[in-house]
Amino acid sequence: MITKLEAAFKPQLLEVTDESESHRGHGGWREGGQTHFRIKIISTAFEGMSRVAMHRAVNECVAEEIAGGIHALAIEAKSHT
Image 1 (cartoon, one colour):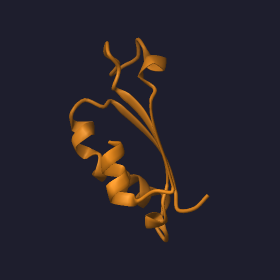
Image 2: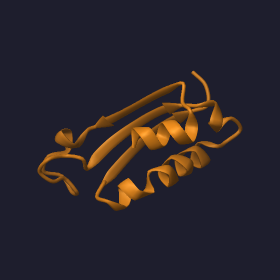
Image 3: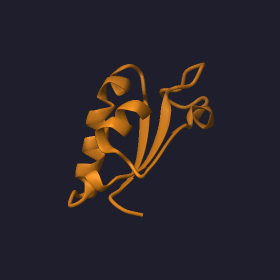
Image 4: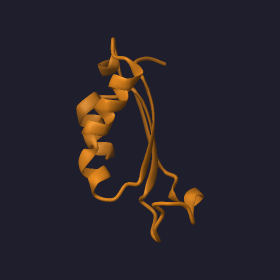
């Protein structure tokens, strides 16, 4: 995910956190993690985009990973700090 996000958005800040363990026992959780992620991204590529548009852009970028078994993706996206 990190490589795809960096290539697509050239972010000034990118943090991808696997939060799966904190969701143990909840829907979508499975042994080994990789089910619940938080993406924090700041990129000038988001200039002029609404919050919904930024989230859609991030979701489209990592659609393959989502289809591959990610249950939940929290996104914090901004165009500037």
